[in-house]
Each structure stands twice: as C-alpha cells, then as structure tokens.
Amino acid sequence: MPLVDRLQNETRAHYAGLETLICVQALAAGTLPPDCHRALHQALAILQQALTQALAATSHPVLVALGAEALPVHPLLEQGLVSGVPQDRLESHALIGAIALGVRMRSAAHREPLSLLGYHYALRLALFPLPGTSPWREFAQRLEGVTIEAAEEEGLIRAASEAFSLIRRLLDALHPARELPPTWWLNRDAGEHPMTMDLDELQAALRAAEASWEEFPYYACRYGEHGRQFSWSDSAWLVTLSGQAEAQVWKHISWLGGLLAGRGMPRLMLERHLRMLYQELVHAKPMQRRAYDVLWQVAERMAEERRRLLDDQELRTFGEDFDVRVGPEWSQRLRGMGELLAAAVADECCGLAQAVPSLAAWMCEPSRFPEPWIRAVEETLTRARAFCRVRIPSGMAGRE
Image 1 (cartoon, rainbow, N blue to C red):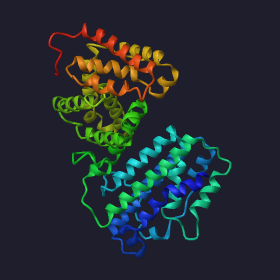
Image 2 (image 1 turned 90 degrees about the horizontal axis):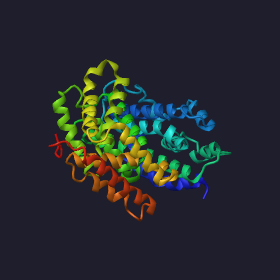
Image 3 (image 1 turned 30 degrees about the vertical axis):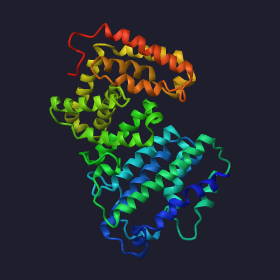
Image 4 (image 1 turned 45 degrees about the vertical axis):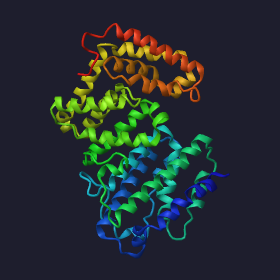
C-alpha cells in the first residue's frame, strides 16, 4: 500500500475523533472561551516552534525545506493569536503535553529524522487544514522522489498517530475544562506528585529523559512508550528536589534507585540520568547552578557506593567484554548491557536482592535472545559476582 494511502487509513479514526470533541465544535462556532483559545494557541505555537527547530536540525533536503516554510494560519485560530510560546511559567497544565511532544520531535531529528514527516503531516496539514486544501495531495507531493525504508515508514506513521493523540487529549481537556494534575500530561499512570512548572526546567528534565533513553536502548526495548512516560514524570519530579539538603535528597533518590533496581533498572541508570539532568538544568538556567548542585552530589554519592565494588574502568571492561561475546549486531542493538549487568551485581552486593533477577530474567528469555547472548549474560553475571563479592566491606551488604 502506498505510504500516503496507509497514512490516511491509519489516521482517519484520529481525525474523525477530533471532530466530535466539544472543544473543536466550540472553536468552529466561535464560542470557545478566551482562556481556552489562548491555551490552544500557545500549545500549537510550542509544537510549531519545536517542529521547525527539529526540521532545521536535519540534513535531509526535504526536511530542511519544510523547516524554512512559513505556513498560513487557519482562520478559526486567528482571533486567538494573541500570544505565542510562553516564556516562563506555564499558564495552563495542558501545555505540558505540548512541551513533551516538542522535546520528542527535537530528539527524533537525530534518532529517526524522516519520522518528522509524520509530525509535519499531523500538525501542519491535517489538524486544521485550510479551506480548499487537501492534506493528502500536499503530502504526496512532498514525498515525490523520496526513498523511505520500511522502518522509516513505521516511524513516520507512529509520529503522526502520536501527534494526533496528544492534540486530542489537549482539546478534550481544554474545553469543557477538566481538573487534571500536571503529571497527567506527562504520564497518566503516575498519579499526582510534585513536578516543576518552570518552562525551562521542564524542557531540561524532558531532554535529560530523552538523552537517557538514547544512551540505553534497553529502556525502549523493555519498557516501551509507557516506560518513557514514567521517565518524563520522574525527571520532572527530580527537579523539585533542587535546593534541598543533601541528606533529604539522598533519602528520596535512594528510595527511587532501590525501586527502579527491583524493576530491572540498575542504579547506574539513575546515576547517569541525574548527571544528564544536572547538565541540562545548568545549561538552561545557569544562575540556578547552586540549587541544582545537590543532584550532581547525590549522583556522585551513588557512584561512590558502586565504586567500592566496581570502579568506572572496571565497569567499562565488563561492558567491552560482553560486547565482544555477543557480537557487533547485538552490541549495537542494545548498547551498554554489559555495564548494566555488572552494575546490577554491585547493587545486589549493596543489599538490593532483586537487582540481578529483575534484569537477568528479561535478558535470558529464549524467545527474545539467541543462545550466545544468554550464555554471555550468565557468564558476565558469574564473573561480576566473583569480582564484587571479594570487595564487599564489612557491613556493606545493606543500604546506607
């Protein structure tokens, strides 16, 4: 099936669902409340800015050309165009979802650039098409002469669906107004907990989450998009610990690290994420560096606990050896798994009894991995346990 036809089929239900929303009907009738109109425009401005920046960050000629276009605004939105991208605090919680999708688009520019065509289609052509225009025809014209592989096509379709889903949630919650906690816009299963509402901090938190997922493809392979949303909400919560006393922050981080380790994520992953989060925050708001320093400090404290058993070079050696054992195809597909196995053993030696089983069970599943991979996992765990256990100081077998 041609890509344009498939895209039309895949998104038809999304588009039909939008037309049934009270918010869209009020927009068309000119009865949408001003505050909702303002929030809608701000959300669209956030998304358009992010998409333009993402397109400009690529080298593909079709994408670069799209990024340089100044598209006309649909008449239904003109009366609400009184404000663009918010500059500081978020006036509406609904904007959080737009910010998250914006960060995703910027990340996609490097990860799977042609998926930006899906975002472009959904947000610029199909969402509010201009009278007398055909999104399908315009999109088909863009694709003339463009070679798209099967995996790229899947990414494009997924991006379009993701954009439609976000916009539908946004419009559904805007009008009639629904009281939803801020975290809902990042992760509907996170419950209600504190998170930063500062625009720069939120974007930094989401960038750090995306960078963590880029460093460890294991996140996506095991936890999927649902897991990504937990990374978003956790990262936005971690920002709120800034400026607190180190002992209090360590209590929170230690609890989270133990929880995640028991669910298959060695504390090394949280340690690395805290460092990325710190760097993103300092880059975004350098004047607040002193408040953010505590995040780096607790990351270092977590690292020092591990280094008593396994220093950084030894950790890298385990990773390199594992990569040799599993071969280039698998070591590229799931980077960093040898280090995670060794780090899980260190966590186990620090008293986190489920750190290894929760990781090894997934990594040794025969329906998922070939026999050489499973053998490499088992051998790496055996060697790491032998290596770490001789270094366990007296009384270290429990948490600090």
